[in-house]
Image (tube, rainbow, N blue to C red; front, side, top):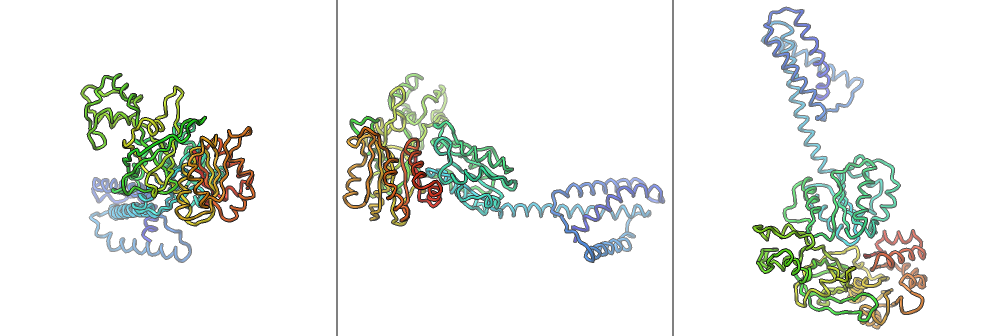
Length: 594
């Protein structure tokens, strides 16, 4: 009622502001004009303040009709009449104009006070609305890193009191997205600009959307690999698509190179999260601990192969370290000693001088081993070396599928050497297969890859791999053997069986024990006509359909280009595109391709 009266009185105040000077001019000049002018100015200022406060208040009185309207008008008239009869005579002015101005200014100031109160209440209500508004943290993850960051972001928003839902993009429809007022998207890019598997359906549907999302505020953290030409392409597509549908971007898209250990992108994302509420003091955005694992052993597993050498690398982790089959390890590589020596010689720097680096005192040459030396300008003469080191760029991380389970005692990797055009080794494979000495420490972190974990049940599983992709499949099979789950079917391809049948002893043993019911092998160079795993699938269509009818899941690991694309297309031909999409939605078609 007060809000409605305030709106009505403002109209009368505007009328009074115009009529009072005229009234004073024509009525008796019994009052001195100076106080009247001061009152009039104060009245005008009070009314102006009240009108300016109107947009920030929540005063939106409902329109009344009939008897309710008449009742409100009569009550206001009664109140004003009582003021006129009993309060107005107390005014310290003789003229009716002075008395009216004296009463009007008090009503105007009271209106200002009410407006200030309603504005403060509106800000409180807005704060409450923001806290209770539905927040979405959407993710698209292929190797698990985007999922990990999404889980962290969701946790921090929940700790700040927000109502948050964590969902993969494939779970979002146009109607569901309309239910949110705020959204954070953490999305990876797969291959050459493709969406991850758990965003493929969203990508297809979102291209057809037409409705406006003008209620939505969003921000995108895009993950990618700069070694690919279309860096963070899916994240950029998502940002553009939402913006084209009238959603409001809270800030420009943030790009994160997943191989960068010193990313400014994560700092920007953390700053964004802190702006929404109280920071989580006991959590950091990249909280996965770094471990020091000793190089236990390594050996070539494909001697005389036509392909590049592959090594089995076994690492001894600290006690109590654990992981699951399907998980990934990030390795911090190091330069070889000759590269460090050449850099020191070129820049005339003493590599033996001690520096404080990563909470330990070591020779400078040891610290240099982790840096991108071609980007490192030498320190100035009086520059603090420890400070200088923190400003340099580290070598990018390298990620590998884990080929063993914790019960086997070692973390096992299958690493193929990469050779550059000049014949030198790639930084990651060179470190693990050539430059690191046995018993030397290797910096690593274990990264959960929950989307490539085994299901809890014992339903059949079809494993498809080529090349070093057999590493993750070998760990999954070892876990199935440990659980006593025998319904496993393996399809594997490489060059030649004599040289390139990785983990042959384990696979043959599990076959003999009945844990691999079917093992289909395709060695492309062992016959005149080349055969690949996609050909094995085509030949076994009846068994494929039978296993899928029994609830089987498909796990594919290996190269994206070639095998990954061909297997996907073959599955679409054998099963139909709709069924393949359905398998993906059900979590029964999982891919770990690179």
